[in-house]
Length: 347
Image (tube, rainbow, N blue to C red):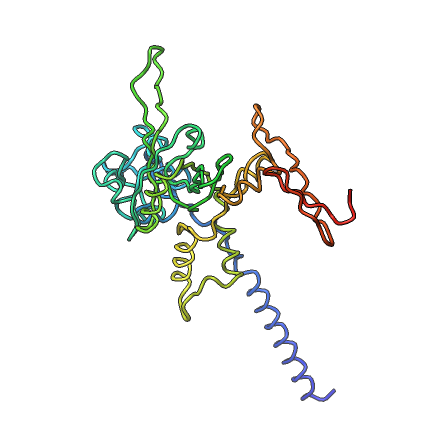
């Protein structure tokens, strides 16, 4: 064998052995990477304080979903915070935010105003709005199940006499929708004889309205009886969707998402007095009127309905038939003050 070929073969074997050795050292020498768990964030073990679940701007009425108690570091707890050991959420419901609170921030005692405190209504009212008090009872006030922060419709019930005969017109009309309840005069008195707190049902409800609607509510109180109709929470979203589909909402061009959300929220929470609905007594009972009695219409209606029976139901009266009009020549026969027309050829 040629000497030169032998040298090349030996060199190739040496290179191959060196390569294998280096590869073995590379795989065996490098240790597998160790997987370490990320350190878990320590959960605060301090006292539970009242924290805002969402952003609470000025004028927000505290509801059960607005705030909650959660642990807070002991070194960061302030005397102005509401502690779960000393406070209950039920006692804070209906209070109004006086200073804005961001989501996740503890609620301080100075940021809330309770009903009856000075400046309560001024803090609860929105810009340009007015507070109007409406007298209610257990029948007209949803049996006391209306609380601050709820939204209600205002229903006016009245009796219209008109200028004619017959029964008056009974009518009920929804004059304003989507009013926000600011406060009620419901309160808890001292303990009764059995040692239990005694709750006095409210007789007035204060709502938020525009200056024009405030005048309308004041006049409505002199016309008839006002009743509250409690609205569902989902009503505002449904009406907002219908308004957007109908093109009633005009958003400015180039507005960002925050501005659009603010405008949509203001549109959904505004009180409305357009397109009122009404029901008359005739829509409820066939024995009631559907229109206001008038001098001309009352006589015609009495021919069909008749005078009211002792039980209240109108009696049907058949009007006498008019005498037939004679055709052809007639002879007038006078007998005293009575004049009779007799057709020619008749007996």
